[in-house]
Length: 306
Image (tube, rainbow, N blue to C red; front, side, top):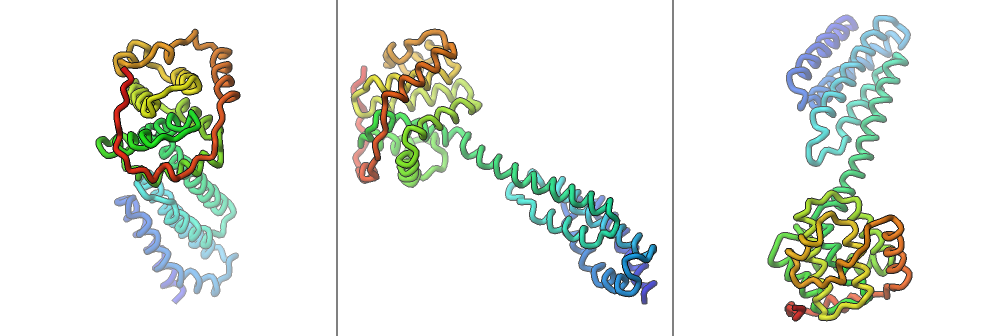
């Protein structure tokens, strides 16, 4: 019986290797099939010979290496697929570790397990960043930030944001009312820190000039929605402006009604930017916003800003 088990395992390892090389995408199933077929025989032979018997050690390590390679090939084949979490690859690799007897093989398995865990951790970060830096999210936060930067939420500003969401795809699949409610909770918790974080996101985002011009249009429409603009809003826009690459001429072409005071800038030296940033955040303040402002269902009324 033992010789039959040994021959069966050798054949199963060879068959797995052949299938794996033919179809890496199915390497998880191939590896699990090998584990399922070999595990009872492995356990029986281990009990019969013990871990120190040379022939069994070679067989056990060959099994571990093939299971390991199934996990590696599967991971490499599907790591960029949507929804891949790494769990299946880790399952295979952990099974390989259970079979391995050689220290070097166990060390290699441990390195690969750590590599998959690192990928999972980094993928979570990439997913989080993609949510933060995707353009619809930035556009929505631009509207929200310019709505709140004067310390007041006007019903017409809310109506404008809803109108944009209803009539365009600018905000993507964002549920406007849920997101507004959520961001009010966040800004009430963070205060001015929310607006500082918005500028960090804007600064680190990779935007085309067309996207920048869209953000400028959203910003100005939101500022003007309550039919009044105070100097803190002008300063807030100037900070916003320093993080964009478009020219004043491009801005004026996109938003023809924009006042020169929004574009009045010196050369963007670090000292100038620091002063601009400090000037706004030292003198402006953010109150606790009420969600009651979201209850208004009024339609957007375009203000006369010409």
